[in-house]
Image (cartoon, rainbow, N blue to C red):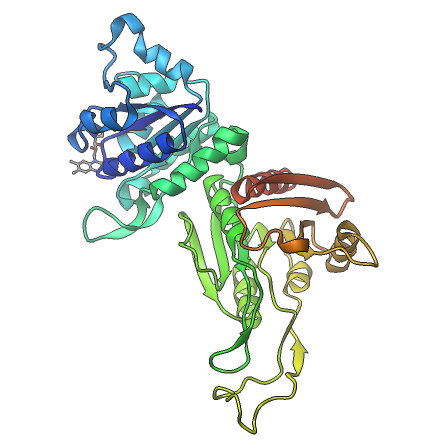
Length: 405
Ligand SMILES: Cc1cc2nc3c(=O)[nH]c(=O)nc-3n(C[C@H](O)[C@H](O)[C@H](O)COP(=O)(O)O)c2cc1C
């Protein structure tokens, strides 16, 4: 059980804070909600008190003998401010202490996560962006807003991410500390391939693989939380898109190849985590192959697909880091890492993230263990743990090898 302070400021999305509070309490945490006076225009204190089981105050003049404005921050293991308004970000950046939440932010020693939500114009305004940069420079985590429907009919970046997504990232910080979401990818453009390609045989059948896209999704989510501009080229991923990320959907290896070449052109980091088919049927039947027809194939001839990772390595621009993934199994010839080292040498990428997929591990599972092999010969084991934690470990390794923006 951890002690979480949930700061809530005065935006329409304050109603989602009740769901986030619920997610935290259901995970077993003790939550103290500290709303601004503005937040209480949107959600009543009784809602936060009933759901948290703790008293709710907004100003420094209540609970004076307890010196709440100092104690609440000092005792917290994590502070999450969701939603964080433009005004709250400005007060925090200026170091103001004129309500209980801003005072708490000045006394917290623990990781602090701001989750901004506001209209696109307010978010993109240089004043807000400067305040975000100041908070990040001082060690706070500022998550990107989601893109989507805002308060009125308009849409764009500025939406509060879904409470379950905020709770998942908060869990990563509670487990691994603020370093897991270090703001070290700000200004970096990251392209990630995720999922598994499908190679059509006829209009209804395909050759596919068992990749769910979960690890690629986690890499995208964590990179965005660390400040990167993220594009995911997603092959057949049936999961809701991570917030703060642009998704380019593809189906086949050839479509993935075209999209990756286009997106990787001006990327600082390229991560090939998708499972791309090595082969595709030589011909795609125009009509469904019938079960008992004379046209029933005796065999399905295959042709080799392009090696997208090797192509991206050949075309990488100066300073670009290319990271490959290898799903390996050991065999009579050699163990997993020996196969993976040979693959790293063959492909020429900077890092190779190795998954041991023997005995049904990894595919579709929530937990994972990987070894990150580097071209300089080093090997680092990350995990076991949930895929978000693995993603955080992988980004720490990548960030250490990229030059700051
Ligand atoms: C209906 C309504 C919705 C608002 N929504 C937002 C919002 O989503 N984000 C934001 O930054 N400000 C929003 N505001 C403006 C803030 O409430 C205002 O800037 C206030 O000073 C914020 O104070 P606080 O951060 O102390 O809660 C909204 C105001 C109103 C009346």
